[in-house]
Amino acid sequence: MTQHVPQPMPVETPVTINPVVESIKRERDRFVAFAFAAADMLMEIDQHGVILFADGATSGLLGIAPSSLSGQSFHEIIHELDRPVMDNLLQTIAKKQRVDNIPMAFQSKTLGTMLQMSVSAFYYGKLDHHVFLSISSRINSKEHEDLRDRDAKTGTLNKTAFAEQANTKILEAEKRGEKLELTLVDFPELEAILKSLSAEQATKLLKEIGAYLQSKSLDGDLAATLDEKSSFGLLHTPDVTSKEIISTIQTMVSHAAPDHNKISGHSQTIKTAPGVLTKQDSANALLYTLNKYAESHGEGFSIDSIGAGYQSMLDETVTRMSNFRDVVTQEMFDIAYQPIVDIKSGIVHHYECLVRLKDEANHNFSNPYHFINFGETSGLINDFDLLMTQKTIAVLLEAKKQGKRPLVSVNVSGRSLSSVLFMDSMRRLIQAEPSIRKQLILEITESAKIADLKVANAFVQELRRDGTLVCLDDFGSGESSFDYLRSLQVDFIKIDGSYVKESMQNQQGRDMLRAMAGLCRSLNMVTIGEMVEDEKCAVFLWESGVKFGQGYFFGKPNTDESSLELCSKLLPHYPGILRAKRFKNEEIERAWWSRRGD
Ligand code: C2E
Ligand code: CA
Ligand code: CA
View 1: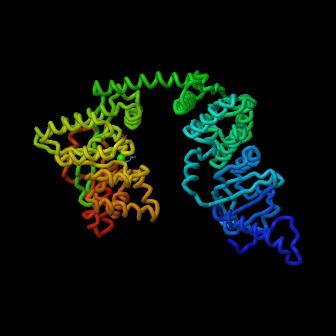
View 2 (view 1 turned 60 degrees about the horizontal axis):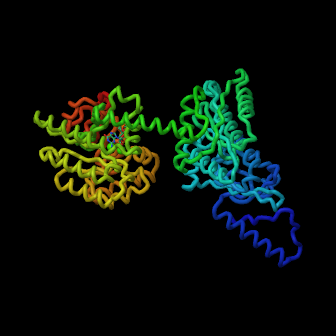
View 3 (view 1 turned 90 degrees about the vertical axis):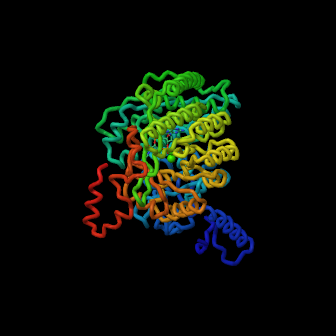
């Protein structure tokens, strides 16, 4: 990268070696070298976007030598779709001084396609208002985080990131005695129009809308996409009006879709004074307000201040808490069983018990995940986990009467394992039934919520001494999963489904999974891979050294108790790896696989 010595711009080349000029040149080279430590390309552009200086891997990345870039418009090397983003950046940079890690697509002649890069810009007023760009193709974790905070289509923030960042800005402005406004806009017909456009046109329109909203928002980066079909929001100073926002977006849409008449648009501007709320409460109330707006599509939406949003949120939480309690006290749920299968032999090892809400409870919580999640955040999960275990024990006792001894796992939230009262109750529940406690596996989910790992581990070891098995769920999904292996000695490790899927994508992922399975084996822990949706995934897990699999390929969760009878038996539609592999003749093998019904 140092082979091209950067030339200071309009500086005459000295004919004789002037030690002062030489030392300035060296100084500049040194700065450029420092800057390269973090970037692949560096550029200096003037206020009109003309490139004055470029250096770095521009030939390799863009197909243009650094010297040929000087004098060109920066606009032209940006991919068409991202030009609005780049215009917005140039318009707002003087105010912001610097922005970091803006994802931007460049037009690459080398690749013949767009090239995703990450751009950081620094505005230097003293140097003729020039803008200095550091452009990098490396995605580091900070940038990943930044990308996760954004809606990929519009480039604006997503709801959660927006609620957090806007809340901070609102509180800061309040301290200075300034007022900000939050405007939410909704265009009910936008979704249909986007569908009628080509994918490229739709992407372009959304990018334009996003860049426009950003340009009108505070600091040029406080706009949000509430749902990518019709609702957006932005935090702004009082001089920006909702009327101009709506009419500009209407014009953009009618330009993109000339056949359509003007689309309709609603807006609501919300007072932002958070009053007496704590920082976290007002951020939550803000998020609640955004969610409600997106859900209502602007119609019948009546919150006019974030404080009112907070009040509604409280009311709703109280109602949901009582609904959650009803589910527990009136047992408004069933248990679904999903098989965990030995991949090599095709034999069912055990079943996982999963909650399924009955219809009368279902409308309050759209799916088990929301129900459990609410229980965890509201602190009511303990009671539910105990009840679920109790119900499962009852099922095992009933099966025993019929001479059957299935093995089952129940989920217990890490949050429950933070309560001494819970652990005492659970211990008593299990100790009371010595005849079936060896058929029970406790599956610890949300282990990050365990308050004291030492206390939780003491409880786990006590259960294991009495014959109950323990499984650590969601392994590989959290940040400190490996730490838990050290703190909690368990029998099974369940590798999170998303991790399994990701691992299949590339060699590094495959190596990591194999290493993980190897580590678990050496710690005497048996591995289970989740979300096995096809044969390929089953084979992949087995080849990586994972022993058991769970997922739709082996069987979906089923509320029929008689499915438990398959425990220790061969799955009817999966013959196990070895038996499948024994079919040397591909024809016969294909015929075998096609026989399995789903
Ligand atoms: P989990 O423990 O990771 O459970 C596995 C989830 O993945 C289940 O979702 C299951 O239906 C789903 N699943 C299984 N195989 C496949 C597959 O091949 N593909 C896909 N896409 N999904 C698959 P479910 O039943 O919606 O449960 C969601 C989560 O709620 C569970 O995740 C668990 O953390 C929690 N949960 C469920 N029942 C209970 C319970 O009784 N107590 C507690 N504390 N948590 C529970
Ligand atoms: Ca689980
Ligand atoms: Ca899991």
